[in-house]
Image 1: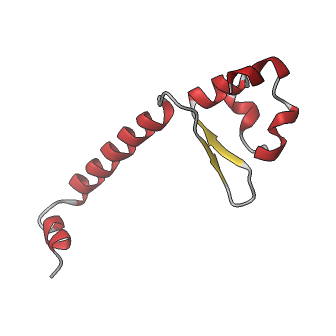
Image 2: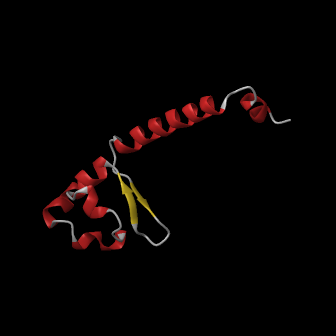
Length: 85
């Protein structure tokens, strides 16, 4: 039997859920507060998520970036902010 599967035996559903939630919190924090800008795009190039640094670098509020096409961002970026790149 797979060792990984065996390691889950004996753990309660609650223990597994807590571990999953802890990992989710950890990686959410890493994404949100990374010192570099991250954008998550769907297969059509639409922005699904953007971290705080990404929005700050673009000079646009996150809520204005979500659901916009990445290829169309240049139309809403103030020209003065392009020097940040």
